[in-house]
Image (cartoon, rainbow, N blue to C red):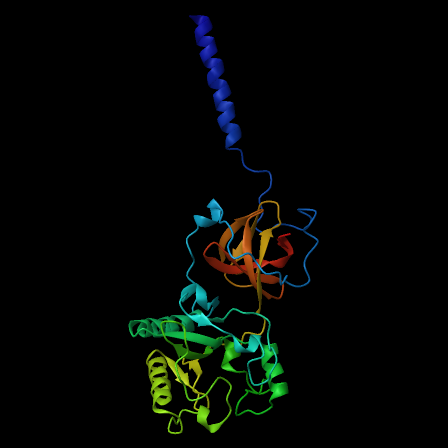
Amino acid sequence: MKKFQSAIWILTGLLCLSLTACHKEPLLSVTEPVEGETAAASAVPETISETEPQATAPETEAAAAIAPVTPEEDALVLVTDFIPQVLVELKYAGEENFTGQPIYEFQDVYLRYGTVKKLMAVQESLEAAGLGLKIWDGFRPVAAQFKLWEVCPDPTYVADPRKGYSNHSRGSAVDLTLVDSTGAELEMPTAFDDFSAMADRDYTDCSQSAARNAAYLEDLMEKNGFTGYFGEWWHFADSQSYPVEERFQPTERAWYYADCQEYITLRREPDTAAEELLRIPAGEEFQVLGICDDFAMIRYSQTCGYVLRDYIQTKK
């Protein structure tokens, strides 16, 4: 009996040691990984890779379990994350604009979240009528605005960046048109970037169908908090004012991973003092959407935010 009791005590002791070992605190825990954590940490890309990402990527269990974070009103967001039905054809990403040349290289449209919410209401009203929106231009980087001014230094059509930036560079202006349920554009007074008198909001010098469609779009946008520019039937600005965004540069989407020892911190703003949204474990993959100085704007699971570029690496 004594031998049996001794065996029980020995087994109990071993079990306690095992449980203690399982709950032992990690030897190293940091908010941001320090330099030299991995051999590849010093190989920081000078620019974000423009390699086309795969259409889809398997989402890890850790990423799938994370609830999306609601952006601040002034946050620049990917419009299609919130209005997936909207069609996007950025004219300044190609040659089909008044300059005849690409002004920027990215294909995604960004706007302030507050502006996107108003656009969501417009899209919902249009869907009830069997229609939708197609966006031709949204957020426009400051460098792109300077490029436009070099090509067309006329303040009637291009905002002079030396005197005051376009609302496009504030992320609160959008160029768009109406489409039917098949995605076909409705008749409008002119094509995009037409600088003739027919492009204004007079609507007396175009067909009745075009006038009706343009007036319908204008009325719906204004009811939802936008103001139209008289000289361009396609241009609307949010009535809410936002500051010029001089740092963010969208890029072609690319897949990266967290190159660190334990995790990298996803923050609400591109600042190490900004609010922490979540932590991304080492090796986890995510899409890089743009760059902002030393930070990259990324989408991890259903949340967009900023991480330090020093601790991410492109997939090979």
